[in-house]
Image (cartoon, rainbow, N blue to C red; front, side, top):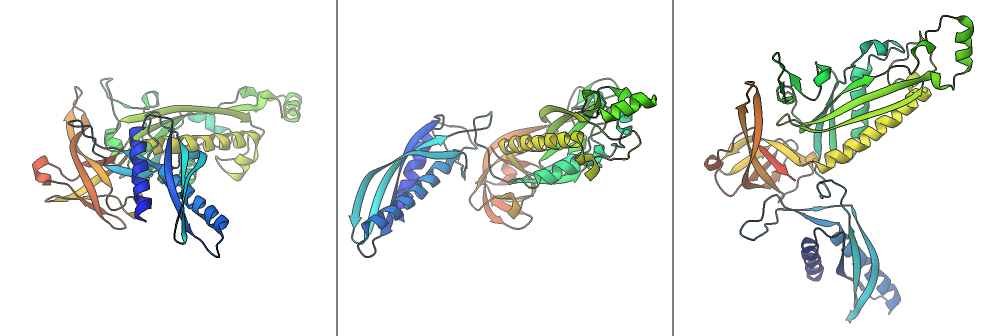
Length: 405
């Protein structure tokens, strides 16, 4: 057991020294008891054990929440990543200790990263609230009675994201975050100035806010479904595979940080599909009848793609939680067992300050205190930890933030 720990620690140091490399080589030792003098079987078991140890080493990565100071890198956190793979496995040594066979192997680690910031992302469970997606052109929803898309789009994304590990999605489909759709990523004041969504995002006790605007639900050729000439209308219905039946679906999506109101990411998505329902059909958005057609199937595929993109984006964003209570050197945060935090985890402490911009609107800034909260106790709805000094010395108060990058 001690030998395994030494091998594991040694490989972590190798990984730390090659953080920016795309691949590196580690060594690991496996062992197995020899039964009935069957060395071949013991060798296979020892190799399997060594591969398991190497896999653990391949999955280890170092995430630092503090900067290098005085030439010393302080390792704050260590988490498991599933983005690494073993290859080029070789047996480099084999020794017999009594009835136990030890086999040492070497393996190449492919340390791929999929985040733009170079990180592999973190596995903590993030809470996101998904608000309404208002229609920029409400009259376009009259065809098929799709007005419910404003709230049901959030429902569709919530159901998909909640099947993703590390995300807890809350349905806030009745909350209209954007009222002036031309400036949907921000808020426009009477004097024309733009400000962040902070006054709205702080209404929801979550880490991130996902919102958006449905930009287009129009038919490519609007007259196709409203043709008054009986002969032409009949022909159009028989020609149901024609491009004249194509309908647009276009949506802008925004991710805001719920603690500061800052826009973190925005994307635009669009698709088309044949709309073969009659002008009077009350289809509704995301109903069985809606998904039975070509248009609904293409929208469903697009929603799946949006969900996948959101999962990736959220995985690469830092984990954060709000401080709910302070006492001496102790901190409590609004997280629980579902967050994925464990005893000994370390999170950076940020002090939240409020100031007013030129338009007299509140703006939030998060200031890194260079303090580290160490998790001591995890309960279903609260996590308790401590810092190395008194919270009053650094003015750490409820509503301040802890983060894991």
